[in-house]
Length: 440
Ligand SMILES: Cc1cc2nc3c(=O)[nH]c(=O)nc-3n(C[C@H](O)[C@H](O)[C@H](O)COP(=O)(O)OP(=O)(O)OC[C@H]3O[C@@H](n4cnc5c(N)ncnc54)[C@H](O)[C@@H]3O)c2cc1C
Image (cartoon, rainbow, N blue to C red; front, side, top):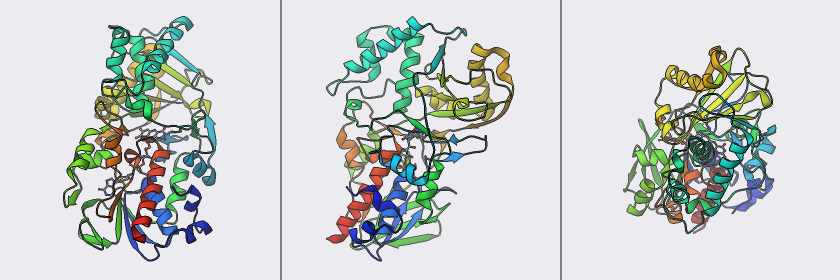
């Protein structure tokens, strides 16, 4: 796999690495994976055009500073920001500022507003560790099934439901009943405590997008890939011809069938598209007029009757001047929350907060929210290992077709799926695959 250094514009290694000068290449989708591939191929001399459905690049990595601090619509953390992590390297080149979020700084409240004591906290945390530690590559079924086997009836305990939702459903972006207990043990990661980027993930996107030609607001409708020497990509009122194409659209878009492939995708790819999991996570940042919580606590946890209903809140006061709490919904509840109007979503979230802080929560200045499952250019947040999946399913999603059409995106990277670094690596892989195909 190529080194990430080749991404830098005008880099000397890049210009001598592959012979692809003058070849036209279309990249579909301007998320991290597509932009990384576009940069590499362009640096190798190709003529690259990125077609992006939305009015802006970034895809599931996008920041708004409207609230006075970064609201990340998609990726919020660099998971495992060791220097080996390519997204950490890219963030360094972009001049990003890091803040380590302290996972141990958390206060947990029951639905009647009382804080959970240290003993109760230690107990649920121990069970959580124990259940996950017992899982290995040979575990079958879902994590929920394994939890019930560990202790039948334990799922009735609201505190247990809280910890498995706030931590595990969050990690995988899906309901505990759907996440494969065995496959999650085959994933890889980088070491290091998670960091957020205080000036936003957007800086990385801006760096990647600055020298690449992007046609925005241009959704691709169809891809024809069975010619000997070219591909044809159709958008409204126009068809582009190129030597190669990369399709980097999210798995949710592939599942939706909104892009037609000619010929039809092979059945093994279609099967894997339908099998691999793709869930959602809802984020809601609420900016308050008054601060009713402690400045130094990183996270607040709130136990609710419904699993996944606002279990976790991130305190912006720890890294900004803004009086913002960002709440999350996970698992099945996230699918419900995604569909709520802004007003209903806020009401739902404030109801949970008011269990702890009473009427103090009423003074809202502004809000920002996500609804990834309702986004027609994503249809979800990130891929996950669903019960019944195999490594092969993810690998099928990365297989080139006719040496003309290539695929990338977080869902094509089994080891590092659902992350920005996984997306980045998949873009490098797709660029390499094209360079190799071009040498033949
Ligand atoms: C809520 C949320 C939280 C997350 N948190 C983290 C985190 O903390 N850390 C982390 O590492 N990762 C996180 N992720 C995952 C990370 O954001 C993704 O893995 C990564 O951004 C995916 O990049 P990508 O290039 O694969 O896809 P995308 O960024 O989705 O790019 C695909 C692009 O294709 C475009 N497109 C779709 N359809 C078409 C079409 N028909 N024609 C043209 N273009 C099209 C889309 O608009 C999009 O721009 C999170 C994601 C979400 C949604």
